[in-house]
Figure (cartoon, rainbow over the protein chains, first blue to last red):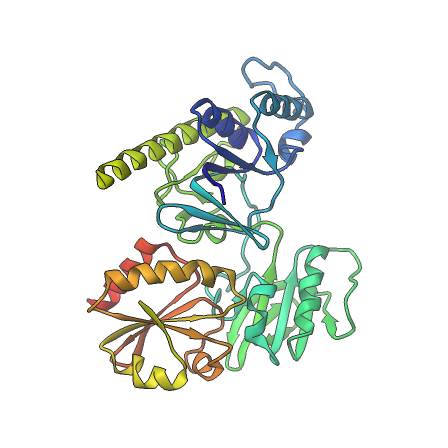
Length: 293
Length: 105
């Protein structure tokens, strides 16, 4: 398997800028994201403070990003990364069933706005899970509650109903649900996850529903879940001026690294992150050479 | 080396060690597969200080129940057969080493 020098997650201004700089430094790059670039950029009406591109419309800026990547021969890989594992001298990036490898990782995913439910983080791994297909076998013949933030998560609830004795599903979206009869749908907004004598419970405005396992399924993955062991500060990843995180070889930039949420600032930080990642790789190579000699 | 054990071996071996790190895992669990080589490395580093075991929760569900394993991977640190601490999910090697050191003090 190819081990890339730098994996960059995100195709907003931070990720694109990091990719351009990494390419300039002759590093092999795995740029993960969307060929549509960033939804946030594309939706921006007009950007007035991007130097050199006066009054540019968001969609034109996204098109310019795409064009510049193409001219620099940097392909965008459209894969959703579920987790990044620090394996010692490299990182394993899980994309569905596939594992990708890189020596360094630059996180440029933007911010996750979802706030955890009260009790969710404290009970994570103690009955609360973010992955039904991962942890379902532990709840064989037991009761599961699923809190789904988009219709996409219904597949996970259906999967659980084959394994668990009972599945209750809380859709946190307005669309009609399409689920097997074995899944009980509760149209109430979950407000808290509680520990009870018999296991856990989901409390809504009007009732309490007990379960052995509670699966909370959101589109966006919080940074500390994406990269186990990563130090965060609220919705942001803790970084220094070199965009280094607490994990050697992992860098963060753009909105994910903190406010102000500005395109220019994101692009600047992406540039710094790529230079830091390149320096990290060169340092590692020197040390490796020393150990071998 | 990380030794794979069943319930019987757990009682005969892990429970009798002064310090043991038991990795509860499953073949279908992605993070477990990533954690395995990290633990293998740690077992070399802690040779003589702590023993390392691996328990498949599907093969030994009674052990998983006994130690209240509700998510895998789950590491249980035993001191003289008593569960002293638990670590859930994948963690990078330096953080796990710090966790073990904190418990062996």
